[in-house]
Image 1 (cartoon, rainbow, N blue to C red):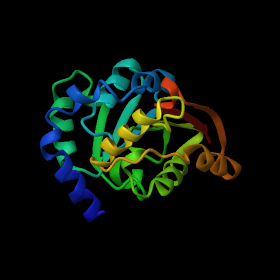
Image 2: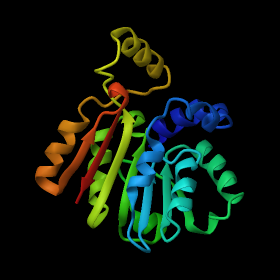
Image 3: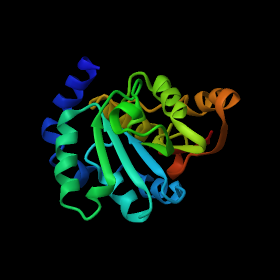
Length: 213
């Protein structure tokens, strides 16, 4: 965890101050994910890789009966997230903790046993052990709980020059589109649940997955 945390802190030490302003133009599908969460009344919702808490705040406002939780490996991002959350009227429903996406314990972090909904929003592509992160997330879902993922897709219906340029640019920020996401979730579905949907909107620019335990 220490090495990955240090890397993320270096990347976001300055970027965190302008992160939400710049990312809104190309992190497509985040609000659609939040709309589709539909947690049960008094449900618990966890974001893995919560960054500046933009999504957590939006989810808290959209789903006023839910309790929101967020983990991130970057202390720098969590520092910004706490400041931003503190200026909202939903701060009492959001809890944050520093943790590794591939190995975390919600009972130790938050005093809760599991979650009704867990989501990754453009964070899976930055987690080196992303397959382990998926397994870990599914293991902390309640019965009938759901995992939602939105991230960069394969850009398969976009021009080749765009795909090549985008991937070169993303690599500068240690971002790697998870081209095998569907195959990984289909394999996990055989053991732990059902892959409800897998979509590739915007010409494949993004991919959206919903997995039910």
